[in-house]
Image (cartoon, rainbow, N blue to C red; front, side, top):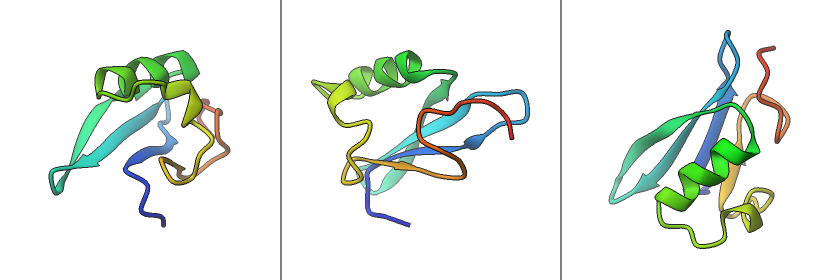
Length: 74
C-alpha cells in the first residue's frame, strides 16, 4: 500500500473501477471509472489541475488489484 491520495480499486464484476480520494482525514468515493477519460474527469472535479499528468505517478495514484489503465473485470 502507498500513501497516494487517489486509489483506483480492483475492477468490479461488471467492469469499471471505484475511484477514491483521501482528503481531510477521510476517503471519498469519486465514482466508478470505466476508462481513463472517466478517471481524469473525476480527478478534475476533485480539483487536480492536470489529471492526465498524475495517472502514472505513484505519488498521486495507487492502482490496486489489477494493471493500471485496465478497467475490465478479471
